[in-house]
Image (tube, rainbow, N blue to C red; front, side):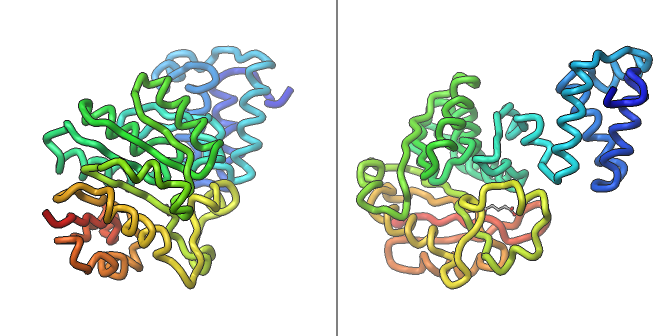
Length: 291
Ligand code: GLN
């Protein structure tokens, strides 16, 4: 027996008490609800209607393993293998960053800014495919290309596209390898969007264990002495492949928002605008190319 009782209400109480050391009470309860919904298919309402429901040993084993992973500070999205992003259910795994609510805001900015959806979009560093898929699901006439350096991330993004019946052209290429990316950037795009790695190594100390120990560092970190590496590279490639009046949409490090914007001060780009996220942090940069 992994739990003292096999009754649903008792099991739930025990899950909460086991993870309560690591998470605040409300969050622990929320997680218990998510596990019970995921493994037993029982919503909160159903849990209240059937508190006496008996759970089998094999089902308890699943919960037991999941709770063990949570106790190692593994994010619940990885434990469940999925998350929700912009109304889409996406598979996630430790090969990809867990999509953030800030990134949903970025998608929303793009959607509201582009009423005409007969456009070509490129997503650089797609990870789970969250931005590309959310845009394709909303801007239905658009043609979306998405690239990533990681084969594993692309395989996962591909599965997400198939599950959602969304057509996105996923390509493996390293944005830092200009020659390797040449084919992708030969195309012309109305929009280039990216949430590239932007956390500095020295900012690691401020990060929570569940991010630091479990999420892919490849998707998160940049060297302290070159924090704008990816933005500079994307700017260079976009100079050719972004159409006149085309736009770049970036998620940025709040401490480097102005510095990132100033990269685009040259004559090829007309305007740039920094927007704040729901925390009030400078999080998004929109750059428009000259006509
Ligand atoms: N916003 C993410 C975090 O704080 C970082 C995303 C990124 O580096 N692109 O963990």
